Length: 296
Image 1 (cartoon, rainbow, N blue to C red):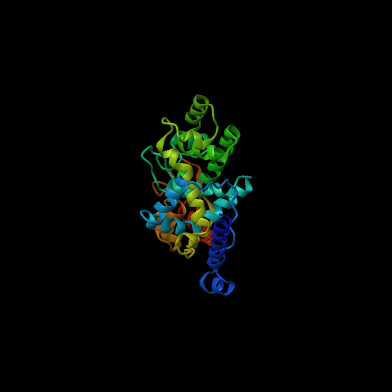
Image 2: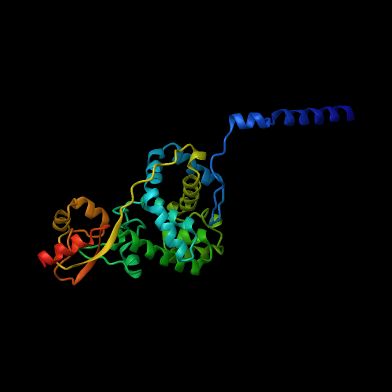
C-alpha cells in the first residue's frame, strides 16, 4: 500500500517538473504582453465578467475596436478630470459602455451624449438644453457634470459598484432595492428577480471593458493608433454668430467647427443670447476676432 502511494506521488512530481518550461523555452515562446496594469476600482473576475470578455472578443469585436480607437482621443482627458476631482480614473470607462464615446449617442430613454444624461439629471448638474443647444453633447461640460453626479452617488452608497449601478438605473430605484433586500452587496442584489436586467450586466460589462482596454493585447486586440487630437481654444462669440459662415471666413469646413462644438444643434448662437464660448481651432484667435469685427 505504501509502495503504491509512493509511486503515485513520484509520478505526480515527475509530471509537474516535466510540465514546467525551461527558461530558454519560455523566452523563445513567450513574451510579456504589457506592463502590469494599475486598477483603482475593485476588479472582480467571475463568469459574468468572463461572458462580456467573450462577447467583446467575438460578437462585438468590431464595436470594441472602435471604442479602443476613440478612447485614444477622449479617455486621457476624461481620466485627467476624474483625477483632479479625486475620483478613480477607471470610472471614466463608464463613458465607453454608455455611449461608445459618441457626442450624439442617444438611448431609448432619450439619454444623450458621452455620459448619457437624461434631460432632468443634466439640468440638475448644470447642462444647458434649449432648442439651439444641448450641453449633454459638450465633451468637457458633460464630463464635469458626470464627475459631480458620481461624487454625489458615492456619498450615498459608499461603494464604487453601487455608484456605477445607480448611474445606470437611478439612485432612487437602487435605494428601494437595497432597503427591500437588506443588502448593499451589488452581486447579491443583481441576483434578485426585480433587479433591472441592464444593470445586472452593467458592472460585469464595465469590469470587462476596463480589463480589456488597459491590456488589449492580452485579449487579442491590437493597441490602436492614436486619433488626432482636436486642438482648440476658447473664443466668446456674440449672439447671431453663424458657425458655418464663421468657419468659411476662417478657412475651415463647417464640419470641423461642428466637431469642436457638437452641443450647438443649429450651428448658430441666437440673437437673443449675449454670446457663447465657442471652441475654435487653436492659433486662430486673430482670425476669429477679425470675423466678429467685420460682421458685428
